[in-house]
Image (tube, rainbow, N blue to C red; front, side, top):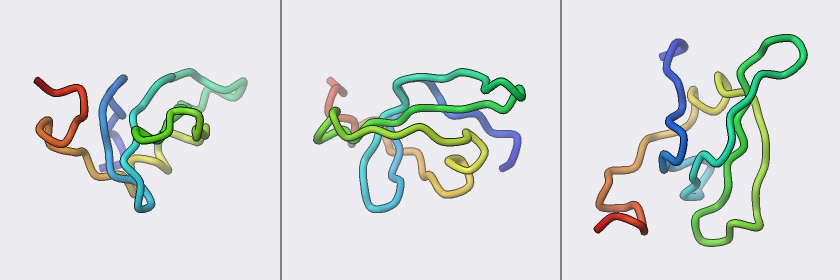
Length: 69
């Protein structure tokens, strides 16, 4: 799925964490970038290329989203 985009505020399983996409931007070279934050600890965050993230991330079902009502 190389053309897939991360959904802003979407929740994903990534490297044994449940994360939320909290920011999207393009770097100076035009590469799509995202910032993700650990759902359990929003202070734990990192930025990375969106394409790299989407190769390893698995979308979480809405019922696994802590904000789901």
